[in-house]
Length: 260
Image (cartoon, rainbow, N blue to C red; front, side):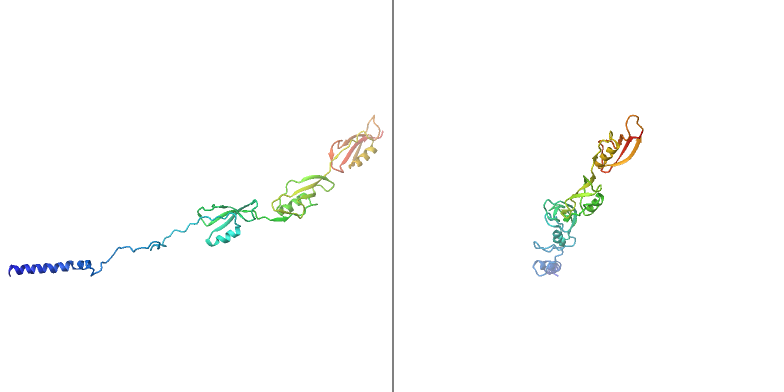
């Protein structure tokens, strides 16, 4: 074999080997065979949800709505759909606000809700009620009736009267008058009229008895003692003493001179 033939064979073998080894790559470069993509991320359009979205999303956090000035029942109805529970924590006078209106809330409006609960203070819901009639009752019975009806009863005011002691003479507000629960009802109760005991000593028994009766008192026990200088039935001593204040009908005891 001559040298030219050898060179031709070597060139032919080299060409075939090159095509076998590099052929697929050359074809890919020419677009004849597709290039396989193994790790290219899919394109996500702007505003579209992430392919992994929703698998471990954090819960949506809410800001506390402004409930102040809204009736509590209306607020409950409005926010029930969002799962918010409104809890009445206290009542207080609303300074003109309608009963049941929300005056204050916790958390404050706009604050982030740690839970789905909002605690509120509402305008007092108590309504006017008729004041019970307690005239003629004992002060203890009257206080019980009024406190059961929701009223406060301070210490009663005594007034001299011939009615039994501690009997209710008057009340303010009057019976049947409309008043708010928790308001005050004042009572005036009977107190025996005080009588200043006159001086009976120095009188004789007959005049002393008459004076005692005229003063609204009662003649009590009469004790007689010997006396060398003063005459019979002369009043030496009295109990209670002159000037003392006693209830009507109090007995007055006398010490008088015994017969000689």
